Amino acid sequence: MNGPRWMIWTALLAISLGAAPPGSGKDAVSRITLKEVLSIGALDDETLFQWTGVAVDPDGFIYVLDAMDYTLKKFDLRGALVKKTGRRGQGPGEFMIPRLLDASPNFLFATDQNVAGVYVFDRELNFKKKIPCPTLIAHLKALGDDQVAVAVMSFQEPGRILVLNGEGKVLSEIAYFDKDAGVLMDSISFIPDAEGRFYLAYLFQDRIEKWSPDGKRLWSRNLLGGKKAETKKISSFTLPGETCFKDIALDGRGHVFVLGGHLSKAPSRTVFVLNTEGELLTTFTLPDTSHCLYFDRDHSLYARANDGITLKKYRILYE
Image (cartoon, rainbow, N blue to C red):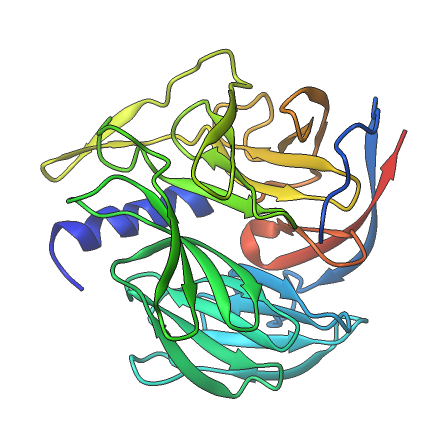
């Protein structure tokens, strides 16, 4: 990968890192606090160097992609390292810029930043295959052992979410972005629910949206009062230099959690909590900056600390 596309995707990674089925969405929540229950990696050890993706399997084992040593790591429920695989390279199971990770009941799905495809590993970290994809992947979620949803972007077409089977066949598509508003402006994080609906958080626009499985926008909200990300010049491209939002996740009680970016009150720490109709219920602040939010099947929340050296696990306390 080289040329303009490589520069844009590298910029996207830098900006971002600088960074279970839901219920009805009707639960009233006035306050959320966090209780730390696990911490993996510290400033005085070499457990993690800069983790980028996290996933948890049905038995509670924790998997982490580490961008600095090009590995996929497996930890037990107490946070002890069980196994790791990977190295720098472009062969099967190797990484150049490991980026996204998710888990199905039996498999792990990982991406390399500048590779148009999804790597599949089993839970023992054995590389199984690569799912082809027509273009680079901006976001990834597993829908089952043989199905993934990916957000893709290209210069030729605006952003889309594709549902792929294990052989790379496109099963369905959501064209969520209907006009060209500039390079990277269609960048999103997304999360599917158990009914196949998708919740989208735009990285560089003040937009949170809900889409039906057949590609209809159900609602669109802004949480930042319409703030716009500042842009900067990189080579011959004008790119956004600030994030509005960084990630979106669903808990087990029908709440949508949105991680704010640089434009939030507490940059990369403010979390907005909405119901599934897009109504803002409350906000809270993470103890440290993070680039992502992740819920496991027990509804514990995972986030970043120490610039990616540490992975934190929290129990959510609702009031």
